[in-house]
Amino acid sequence: MIRPILRMGDPRLLRVAERVHDLQAPELSTLVDDMFETMHAADGAGLAAPQVGVPLRVVIFGYSDPSIRNPRYPDADPVPQTILLNPLIEPLSNEEEEGWEGCLSVPGLRGMVLRYARIRYRGVDLRGNAIDREADGFHARVVQHECDHLDGILYPMRVRDFSRFGYTDILFPGMSDADD
Image (cartoon, rainbow, N blue to C red; front, side):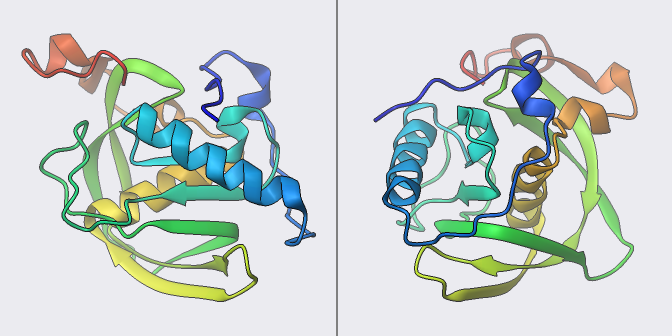
């Protein structure tokens, strides 16, 4: 089921999400299925449970087929489809890189955001299997962006130079990104 995506201004997006304790809860599996359906319908690269009004530390990102390119980020490298519960992120160096970000909760806008260039992320999947990966580039950016949602942080809060924040159609003429 496609769920409504909360938009910036909704106070639920600013709350810190709670840890997932019961991996066997049937509503958790339903939530994840709905999140993937919602993310794909909106051409998202990732989605956090708080964006659909569920205050749990659950994020999803990527596509099951590595050849699929996200239409909102056509030049980005593919990201593996992942369900990540109770994530922890560790920077692997102090090196940071800038990149344009958009968000399904901040439609029609993009901003330049500084993120760690290389990270290690850990958590578990729906079966309780440990996930422990290193990521860089777009993959690292997506993970950091989605995990920010779990702490009530939207990417505009990380924009440092507001001359590089604005409407997608103005910043990138001709880019079809109305549903950003």
